[in-house]
Image (cartoon, rainbow, N blue to C red; front, side, top):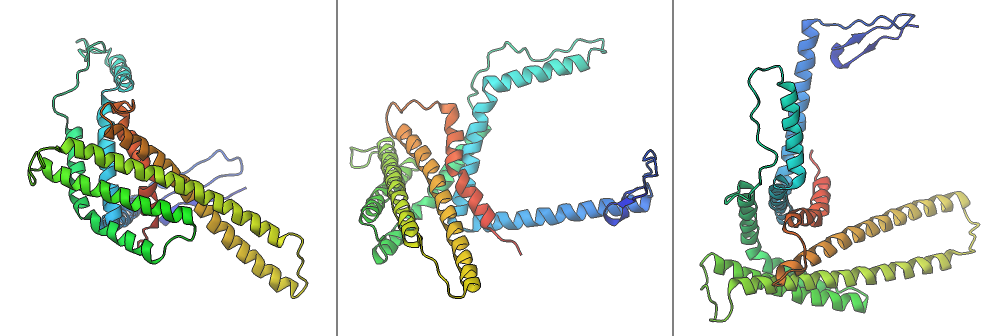
Amino acid sequence: MSNPERQQDGCLDVSLDTGGTTHSTNTDPHCVGNCQLWSIAAGLRSTDVTMHKINSLISSSIGQDAALGSIEYLSHALHYFLLSRIWRKIKARLHALLRVMQRHRTTPCHGQSTHTQVKTPAWSPLLSLSSLMFDTRCTLRLLGLFSIWTWGSETAKAPPADRIVRELTRLQLVATTVYQFLENVAFLMTKNVLPEKLWKRFDSEKLYAWSLLSLCVHMMLQLGKLWRESVLRKRADQKAVASTNGKIKMIDKEVESASEADANDTETSARREEVHAARKSLVSSVTWGALCAHWGMPAGIGIPEPFIGALSFVADAWELRDTWISIEVP
């Protein structure tokens, strides 16, 4: 049985004889050159698409904050990972592997001892990068009160139908406004734009703590909204099942069944996306609520410092992923 197969642009020519024991590869320099050119062109196209998506991502305030936040949290997490016991074990195994590979040399390998105590450096480029991203995000959030005003205006014009959700949303507006205002004042105080001791009573650390506790309240209210919305979804599902139970339509069966199938598919897809978004919001709200409570309280709530960056990235990972996927490049 003979079945030749060729790769893109004729770069690879493989032929199988009857016994399947003979393999021949076309090593024509012209074909190899075409393959390399095709690979380079494909790599350039992929890079171009990625650059367009990054540009679209950082063109919006939400995407910009998500991108800068990811850099801030990942650099923080990477700093503590490089100081962790796991990384020390990995380095020890790599050093042992290098010693095995270099045994044939006459000179001994003077690698770094695995028993030396690792000290936290006085200066870390990763922590400096994380701090820079934090300052950049705080600077961009100085204008955040305008977006909060817009959110409040839209809520006032088209309030939620459910009374509990409506009241929780209004409380969220108050908590978010307090958070943003206090953070702005505290950040301007740390940059010497406002007096270091404001009104001779409040310093920047206290204002930062109160702002974070206000954001924690916002996250707790979001959990209440998610619970109430889940209750409303269950009630709507029960009503839908009760209204369609036992009903048989006999007019234009084919057209009616097709339209019902399309409507059911659309409704099911929308409901699935709604539930998926609620679950992501639940993870983000719980994570941010715990982090804000830890930062806002003087003694914290017991979250280890090496896990702060990783948890913060988890809280924002959904938003970054969804924003990235939603970007369409022509």
